[in-house]
Image 1 (cartoon, rainbow, N blue to C red):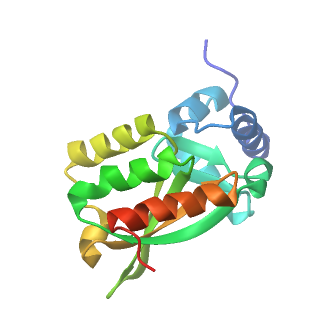
Image 2: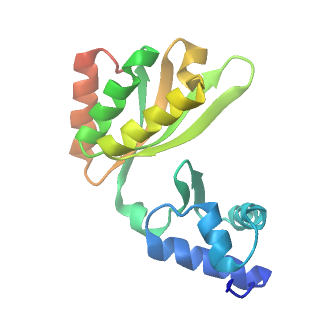
Length: 176
């Protein structure tokens, strides 16, 4: 038996609550099943929630609520440059120091700022991300800028970011 279809405002409140309670990404299909609606309705709900300034993020792993819990973490933009085949080493360096790599950003000559969600916080996440890149045959954003890109990283302590940057510097990846 399928769940009772939730009405729009009730459904959006429920989505926010489910995302807060989960604390990890939830796939659109899972949210659709819980709410008794299609995945497309969930996509529309997410746009409406963002327009209402709810901190809901779409990631490769599903939707996440980025509210209260993340507010105490240290965040910093880190500029790096490396070849495409060094991506895994770069991401491993971040996560090995306890960082989460949230976003990648490049500055494109024509389109301006282009960004994508990465959301990796351990080696298993990095491996899965790299596998998705390989399997899809997609180019990395950094390939549009000769390897130059920024990452928004997050950690519970500032020293973790400092230590990761030192390791990236040693590898020749860090741009200062």
